[in-house]
Structure formats: structure tokens, C-alpha cells
Image (cartoon, rainbow, N blue to C red):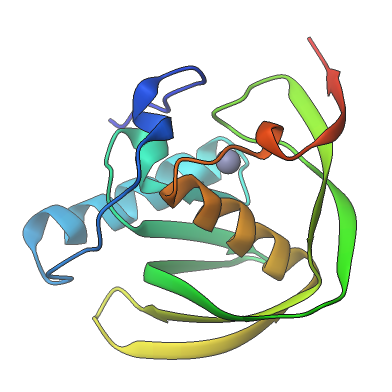
Length: 151
Ligand SMILES: [Zn+2]
């Protein structure tokens, strides 16, 4: 069973490496395991470094759909940004407002290695930006205002 690392674990601060082979056994096993832990913890997203793997892989759960994004790359960002509340499974008990692009275009490979390019807006865009930050060692608390602590 995977364990979620919490701040200040140094693994969360490392820059993650691209996945070289999507079909590798390690990746194919990791994706469903990450989805399982994300759903169990009621998360809307989870990045591989949060489970101790410094590789560019994220999973997202929105509107009853789960999605794996491998080697995601945000290739277009809206000029318009908006503030919204965020939390993170790796920063338990803390919430804060983060300014994110309202709309982005993200390129990625799915679990079968097939390339996709999608336009994400609203919460979907926010989650992709939050998880993508994890791949670069960035936590939402680095960018947040009005951080509150909830026991
Ligand atoms: Zn997070």
C-alpha cells in the first residue's frame, strides 16, 4: 500500500523526471494504486512525488471520472487568473487561496501511452496546475494567501 508523504518531506521538493516508458510494469502498477489512494483519501488529484516517486505522473478525480496524466505539459495559459481555495493531501489541515490561470491547454500521455491535448477550465484547470506544480517541487502553500489551519 502506498503512503502519502507530508510536508516537509524532501521528496516533495525535488524536480521529477519524465516517464520514459509508459508501458513499464512499475508505471502500470503505480497508476491504479495512486487512483485507489486518491479516492480513499477523497482527493481530487495526486502527484507521484506525493507517494515517494519523483516521476512526472499525476492522477485526477473530478465528476466521477479518474484520469492519469503522464508527462503533462501546460502549453497554453490564459491571461485571466482567479483565486480559489486549495488544500493538499501532503499538507494536511492547511487551506489557502491560490491564484491560478482560469484556462489552460495541457498535453499528456494517457495510461496506454496515447497522446492527448485538452483545454481545461475552472476546477479542472486548477487541479492540473496544482498537481503539475508538485512535479516541480512546488507546494500550494508556497503561493497561497490567507492560509488557515484546521485541526
Ligand atoms: Zn497537492
